[in-house]
Length: 232
Image 1 (cartoon, rainbow, N blue to C red):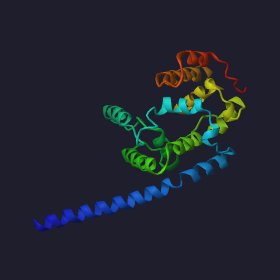
Image 2: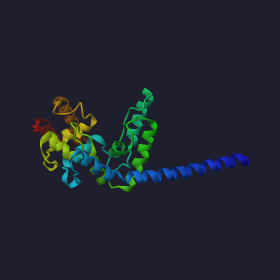
Image 3: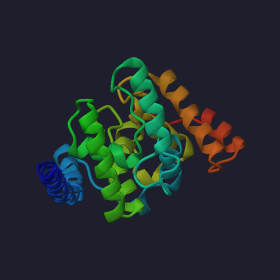
Image 4: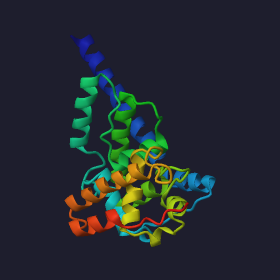
């Protein structure tokens, strides 16, 4: 009995020490996120855009379609995780996402592309920690500056220029909704190549914005038929 207690005590101690080391390592890596995003943009020849220079319409469109509980969640969505887990179990795979904006930022910058249960668990822990150390505004700003919009455009500054020849501040609702839909599949939704698919995705984004109360139905309809001013 004493031997068993000693083994349990050692195991618990080892787990505690490992957990402390893991959290410290995670916090160090999370602290490098802003630098990593800036370096990535510099390498792509793009620039970092503060949240104040990103239209509210693009912020709302992104949150509505990607993570509508973003401003209130703890970095993860239990509903999204549960839904993804059910699909993963039924298909015997780890292909489903269920990710929040915070998790997507972490996945893009800090984790491998391999879809494994280990990567998912690490992403969840990182997201919880990041939400504790960074404001939601900072997280959203980093995400909008690093996300892949397709056509070689990483970040909102590059995307606005590549697709519309505009600065981010000049984007209207129709253009913002179009951009917000592209990260789901940047290749298949590239409006310069697949305009119909991009427009369909734009309608999904506009509908999401209506459901969250960000815009009216009439505003959504007007944006859905508005000219996009795409660069050709």
